[in-house]
Length: 409
Image (cartoon, rainbow, N blue to C red; front, side, top):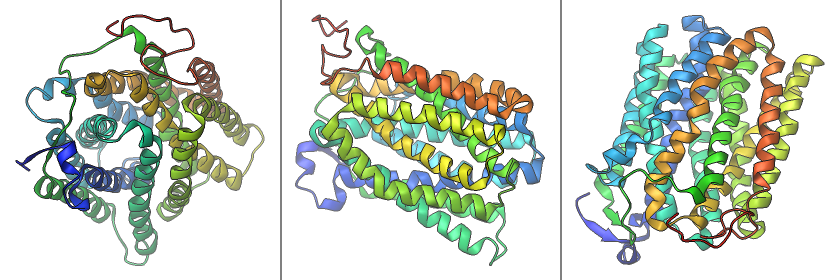
């Protein structure tokens, strides 16, 4: 991958060697390791290590520490090019996932989770930056929707294999983690070998960037990180703990989510492109408020597994609307700020992620419904923040309160 090619010159390359093709390869490779880890982890820690609600909270707190340290990407960019750093991080995610089952104690699980999480979060930081730099603003929402669909499709294949072969072939956690993590690591190696280095027209700042005019984007990132923890940490755990889902059942539920995303993510991208980020964000958080209240109803009114499964799918679908936050930033940002702000925003996104899982883990022991009440309050507050996004965001028009001012502020 020593060849250096500008984005303009890349248009003359075969279609499979262009930047967009590489984005699709990375979008398909990352979820195979990460989503497989997510599908198995609740059953793995309960069956092998005897985790309870507080333990799972500690696990996810440790998992989110690298996200809090995502600002370290800025320092690494003084040594590595963004594309190279992204592929190194992708390989680390794959390799760490591959050996997850080798460490079946709480200390071992936390350690290997930390390593895989560094790979995941540093890859995602760089990947989101490259997407915003390599994709034209006019088609970014729809293209991001297609990239989400590609990730869902590759994960669907992996989950399908788990469902079809877990019981039939007597698979173990070790075999599945080795295969999925190994695939992601090999994909990173192939991406390094077969694609050139792409040079963007706007050199990126390699120092920390915090600008007042991005304040609403920063707040949305913080609240998005808090909202994500309710789903990632406790929604799947609820399906296993309360309803006794097996590996095959929880994976089948994940597969349903993926099928929905494959069809709806491109449509959501088109919707954001046609109706704007403001409406998309308001729809996302109005819907999430209702979903979290309904989650509480599972414990208040004893609603069964069908209601829980439907809510799980709807909750996951709202994640696709989060692409509107990225395109909002793309529209208001100085092009040279994209890489450092991606790192800073990932850190901001994970501030809540570090303390919320362990805190809410203890709340869960007392009242699982209380966790979802707090989630509903967070979603309602973020709905208000979404109303501050202007209809037509642009530099100098970052919020509905914006006044004409120098963009360097």
